[in-house]
Each structure stands twice: as C-alpha cells, then as structure tokens.
Image (cartoon, rainbow, N blue to C red; front, side):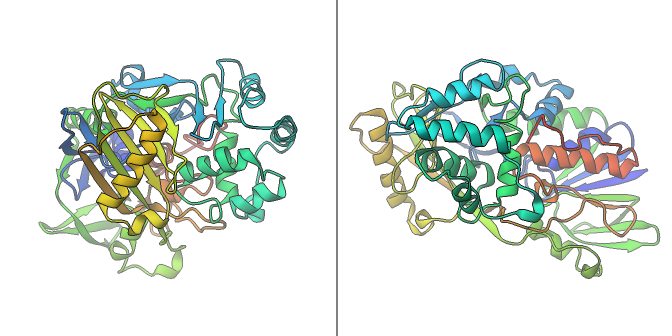
Length: 433
C-alpha cells in the first residue's frame, strides 16, 4: 500500500510514526522543517538559546504525546521538566497543587490558595465534586456563561479559570466552548492518574522533543520526507488519489491530510463540499515576546501569570531568557512590536521586583495560530465519504482544543483508520486532554 501524508506538523508526524514499516510512505511538508506550529524557527537569542515559534506547555496527562516520544527513543524525563502545577500572579493570587493522590492534591491546593475567601473555596470544592466539569455538547455555551451559572464569579474565575481557558483553548472565556474547556479540566484537574496535572516544560527547543528525532527515526525506516514541497490539489483517480505539487502529479492508494483547517478548502476544491462539514474557519492569534535579560534574572517558579493590561503567561526558559505568550484576540494585536515589548517588559519588572532596562527582544506573531474554539463548533470528520481519504489535526476532535496532545491523538487515529485497524486506539479516555 502506498500512502501519502500531507503536512508535517505533530499530527502528520504521529501518523507517520504509526504507519512506518507497515506501508510505503511519503510525508510532504511545505516548510523547511517538520513540526508545524510547535518547532524551532532557526533563530537564537543573544545567549545562543534556540527560539521556537511559540510557547507550548505540556501536562502530565498528555499520554499520547509522551508515548510517541518514547516510541522513537526520546526519554520525556530528559527533555521535559516535571513540576507540580502552580499558578500565581502579581495580585498575590497563588494556587499550588501538592504531590498528593487525586483528589486530595486538588482540594489541598484549593483550600491552601491565597487571596480567596473560605466561602468561595468551599463553594468551588462542592461545584467541582458534584459537576465534575461536565458540559454536554448539546448544552454547550460560552465558558463565561458556564462559570457564571455555576456561581464562579469571584477571584478564581478571574485568576484561574479564565486564564486557564485562554491558555488551553487559545480563545477568550467570553467566546470559548464550555464543553471543550470542561473536557480539558476533567481530564487534567479531574484525572485520577498520577501526575496528570503536572506541568511539563521543555528543557530546550521544541524541535528536540519530537520533530527532529522523528525525522531521523522515520528516515531510518525508509519513510520518504519531502520538505519545501507544497501540495496544491488532490483529485480522485479511479480507486486511488492523485496529489499535485510543483513537481507534478503523483498517485497514491490513500491520503491523510494533516494541514491546518484553513488550508483544506483549496485542497478539496475539486470534491463536492456538501458531503461533509466545513472545517473551522475562524482563527485566533498568538504572539511570543522573547526578552534577553541578564543571566541572573529568574522566576521563583518557571511559569507566571502576567497581571498587566495584556495578560499572558510568562515562561522562564533559563539563562535569563523569559518568554511572554499572548493568546487570543486582544488589544495587543494592534500594537507595534516596540510598544508591546515595552508594556510586557514593565509587567516583567513588576514580577521580578527589579527596575531593568528594556533588553534585546524578539517578537514572533502568528495571526492564525489555532482555530477559534467556540460553542457548537462543527469539526471536520477524520473519515470522509470518499474511500482512501482521511483528515487529521487537532481541529477534527470535537472534545478537544488545539493542543499538541489532540494533534498527536488525531494523527494516531487517522493512521489506524487508514489501515483499517482502528478499534478504540487513541479513543477518548480520562487520561489525556
């Protein structure tokens, strides 16, 4: 069987690893490296630390992602720092989860949280225990509406649930899907697996976690990887499929498309679109500000919630490199780089309690970083009406947002569907969002 995968992001990589050695396989990627929106960009800071196209934080519940790394010989513990989750900001709010079995870690962390009244803690504990973060798809509303109905209108809403929603769904709480956010909370905060809520921070560049070692692993198994080759169209050819690129047309038995949802319509233009739901079209942006501070500048904990006008999360990459990630549509989008850098720098100075000059910085913006995860959003099915054509990507799983775990999970599923061996492999469980 001759199979082509179009797109070399984490979904495409996961599909390729699953298929390697079982079929004749070709992986097409329009960029110069694998990794999609979670990769190194070929630039460094002034201290030589490699920069990524965004900050991605993994959780201990990312079972499929960690398993994929292990499958190709990448030891997660060597590439990821595992820390108990702690969320705090300059207002004095702090919630830290201890290393205790679930649910004792959650309730101990909640009742030990700072800047929250006892009544709010008690009401939240009862809500978490009774509702278990369940929002049925047919009753989906915005996260803001869901929290308001649950009585979550106090400190925790502003300093915990809303920032977590923006970080996980890359969509502000006033627009984001409560069903999807509930799934994320249920499978992290509500997950009984040991270490499910742990924070996993990359020790180095994102490409070292999966894209680079995966390319070597796939090369060694005879997978053909064609970088800098964009596919312009596909069309049926009898019971097979033809891919058209700048190098001409080639025929394959089966195709897995793992491109971003907004790249699907041109590829599917020659097929009747009414036969399946349209992929998500609305997108959310992400900007990452890298600041090169002196090497003695460090955060007490490597993740901090910024409490300034533009919000965002601050990640300590080590060696004085601090990365501020801004997610979802906001006023920051209209600011020039120098104005945005100055504003975030002021927030950072407040965080480290030092008056510092604005250091060398780099701003990386992605205007269409993820799909906008809104209530009732239709997702594109992985199996299409035409035999031999499959779609993978974080936008295909109706219970999950645009994360590395959902991309990996969908890639695995598409490979098994392609082989006809899908029997619950990578199906939704309570172990990973």
